[in-house]
Amino acid sequence: MDEISTGLDASVTYDICASIRAWATETRGTVVISLLQPTPETYNLFSDVLLLRDGAVVYLGSRTRIPAYLGGLGFEPPTEESADVAAWLAGLLASPTKVLCSQTGGLGNGAPRTTEALCAAWVKSEQCAASLDAPLVTMPLELRSDFARRQYGQPYPRSRMAHFVALLWRSITVVLRNRLYVFARISSSVVVSVILGLVWFKLREEEILQKFGSA
Image 1 (cartoon, helix red, strand yellow):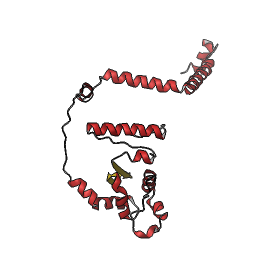
Image 2 (cartoon, one colour; image 1 turned 90 degrees about the vertical axis):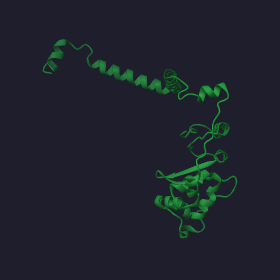
Image 3 (tube, one colour; image 1 turned 45 degrees about the horizontal axis):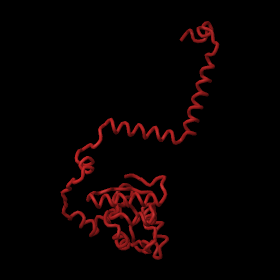
Image 4 (cartoon, one colour; image 1 turned 135 degrees about the vertical axis):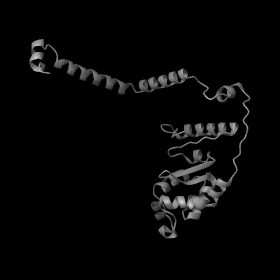
């Protein structure tokens, strides 16, 4: 799920993420979500966090272990319970040098500041080695209810026509929600059509042949 919180307030985003977490817990599933500036309450709903910089993995593991890992590298993550850790991580990924300059020790603690250095530190870490050596655990999922069998008992629970109708109705709904934009587009098209139509208005055939006869 890519930036599902766009256009939503913090309360609605929290309710959605809490529902998704409950679904994942009940079905033993895995959900990967990217959020834009989540609140601390929403951030704390996640079990694991994946940090990417320039497309490279610099951390993948438990959310609660991030402060200890980054602290070992020389960074000073916020430790307060109400701290906005997600915003701090976004700032760190955007500019590690800027984050280090705002710390007490500054740039003299040898913390990695480039993508290559952050990736190398992660590859050499014990958490990365433990995640690679961990055995793959598979759990059988029993579809007990009729809803579960309809939803997950077949590769495609809905037909192609159902998907087409749903997407078509979604597009119509999106267009109708912005009526001012649709009215402006239609009006501009009408004006341009009238202007182009006036070019040939009351133009005799002789004049057309005289001007464009060679063509």
